[in-house]
Image 1 (cartoon, rainbow, N blue to C red):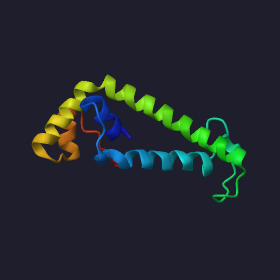
Image 2 (image 1 turned 180 degrees about the horizontal axis):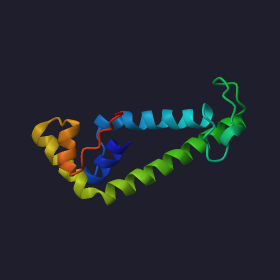
Image 3 (image 1 turned 45 degrees about the vertical axis):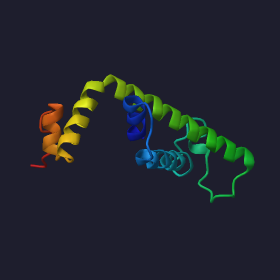
Length: 120
């Protein structure tokens, strides 16, 4: 979803390149509500029933929870992108110049220390 939101924030429009973001976000939010009981209103009260086995009222409640999760995710991602505008622009400029970045190169662009985890 951050791809679509970034396009809107930095380009003033969304392209079809990030169209899959919204479909994936919606699918994940739906799974969160139906499969994992993570809906803001329904919570664990939502049974994992096959599609079509729910009443119209329950389906409406599921869609309300999905919409709430998506709105929250959009607000959070937008706030993060606005807060990190300089960093996002730096990464975008580097990607335009190089086309790809390794994790180590991204660390250098973002000036983050190497955070690799060691099991030793």
